[in-house]
Image 1 (cartoon, rainbow, N blue to C red):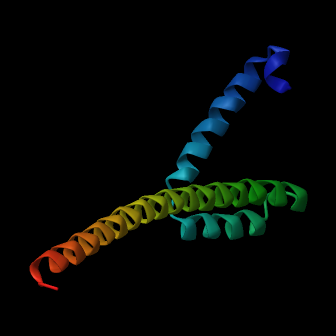
Image 2: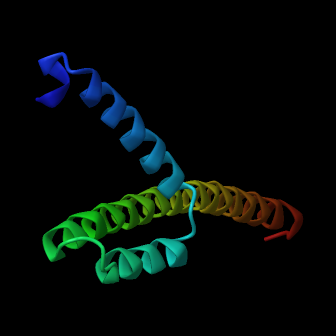
Length: 107
């Protein structure tokens, strides 16, 4: 692990990476896609460097999509719970009305 080598550069590199990752996590997905395309076509780097930089952006897209999926799953779980509660309430009201109807209608 580079962080354990005690190099000042690795800590600086780590801070730069954290800032860049944080910045990417706040970008819209479309902007990240544009960044991927931009990283691939830069002419002042080698093709492997371009691919490596584009891979960072693709990883950011994957994290953003995973975060959005997690948020959606939480909302869906909440809505499911609300639906179960409302269904239970409806069943109880139906049972209550059934017994009320039995008592009010003479046999």
